[in-house]
Picture 1 (cartoon, helix red, strand yellow):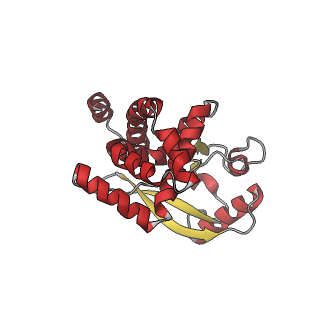
Picture 2 (cartoon, one colour; picture 1 turned 180 degrees about the vertical axis):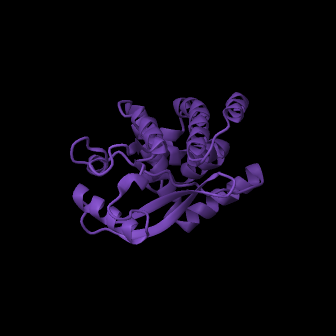
Picture 3 (cartoon, one colour; picture 1 turned 135 degrees about the horizontal axis):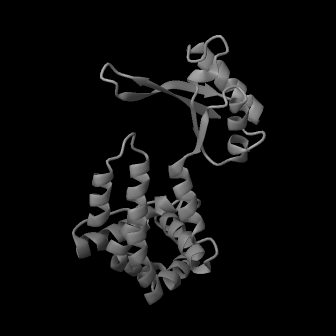
Length: 236
């Protein structure tokens, strides 16, 4: 397991600068093990000196219990060293969880996500199928695009796949229809996608995923101009 350590310093103009100190391989992945590995590493870099943890003011992590547990998490153990430390569950990670869990109880959306990944595998596993798709894309749209992979756990990664499928829907359906009598996989994907409900769901899903993607990128910036955010939100 690799953990990255961040250091915040200020340049001569008083502007905050973010830099990566480096990577450390962790073998003991308990909260205590992670805390010790982090503190030892920061001590070796001179961030923590003479057991003075006041320089360690912020901790950003994912939502794993080993990190955010209120009693025995890494953050809780570090607060024993510095009670002023502020722990933050990464807002980008939380946004991704919200996006993925929003459809958790909607059976059709779960099937939708699964078929998006199956479609990627269908073409990625066969150069012949991809060549057929590329031929139809070039004929119908003048440009060929490969189906991107949408991971099984992150809805935000599906955005590029959904957009490509919507733009080249006709070529994809025609390719699947050509192969549906040859393979059961092609028939299954075709039956799911060649429906009006698939198109009706895909169009608004693009709008939703685009907004979430913009928001995710905004959260990853070191500084945000609220007026700029408002402008982009209105524009999109």
